[in-house]
Image (cartoon, rainbow, N blue to C red; front, side, top):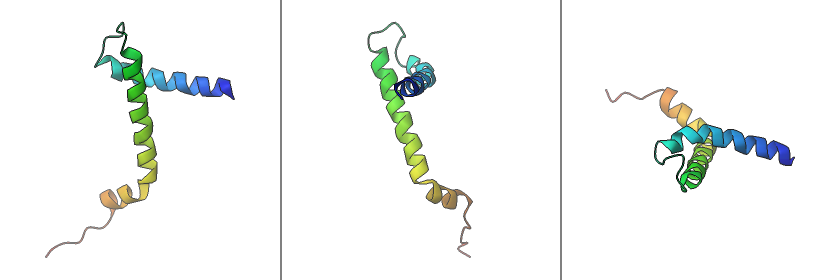
Length: 68
């Protein structure tokens, strides 16, 4: 189980690394902190999209009532 978690975390850090490098140099001491913050924001965004999936679909693809 621990190996699977390490694999998932490594994959998540690999995805977040280019985003974090836009803000901080890769050789900086704070790079890992920024990378972790980007990973947390990414996880929170995915959870939010899953939670509000139905409302987003109805907002973007639902029938709109015309005012006329």
